[in-house]
Length: 186
Image (cartoon, rainbow, N blue to C red; front, side, top):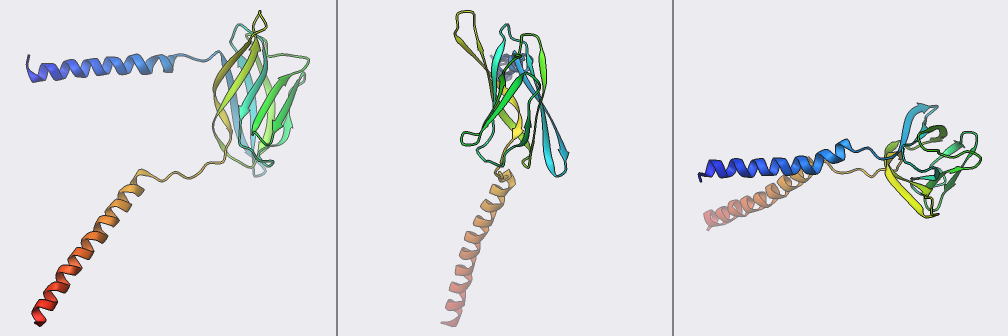
């Protein structure tokens, strides 16, 4: 078997493997969606959430992970029939059923708050009880206020590495020049 043919077989196998691993994750949508729309109002980010339940169970609680700060959210509002709770220490925002629930096949909108912090990807967890009374948990991603730390760009590493190499090279060059100067004086 020629090298070109071996290479093409390996390339085909790797391509098929990548498709098998990546495509199912792109096509599969979770049974619970927490959709956030974010706008800016009076210098604050206004978050408006809708919870879509495509699972066969009614949900009781939806929890979004934020960060622990008393300034993380302000003006917290829930639609009629629901309660909200923000745990400052754990950084968890709960949407709780009260007189209504997140019934299967519905979307509940109107969970709103303001925040001085911009949106970033965050996780959520939704809890439901099955017919046997067992707790079922669903998880996913949504947008939520997050404090982000700046991540250095990849070029920063290259710049630092190049600077270090130039510094080392410059020292060697100056040693060579200095040794030649001392030789010429002798």
